[in-house]
Image (cartoon, rainbow, N blue to C red; front, top):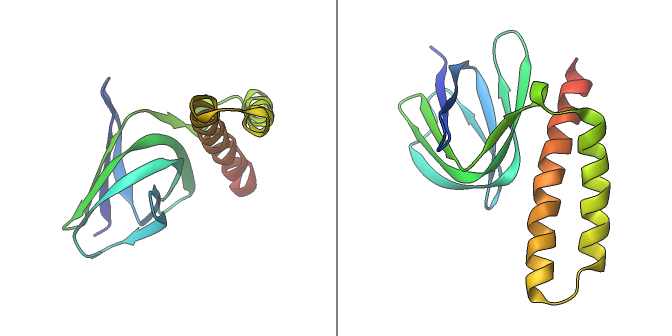
Length: 136
């Protein structure tokens, strides 16, 4: 038996399926989950989530949320989620470069916080596209 994965966003159920392994972007770093993982609830950071099915690796950009792991079921409650297939690679690269530049130029607390979030979001989307290209 493999893991049963459910990704839910406020708008709709985003993805449901079976996986052999997932790697989550938690607030304390990346966390891998395999079959028979100990039960856990963890906060998710903005970042790339990798899912290994029997056939391939898939990647998704998550914009924060929570994950619950229990009895080979992983439920992910994400603020937003995007599949690599829906992200334009060139646009993601350009957005990442712009966000990186804006973060370096940010002044003041509010501007730095906003620039940091935009950077993390753009980085997650760019990473997701790079992973797909790497494993394709």
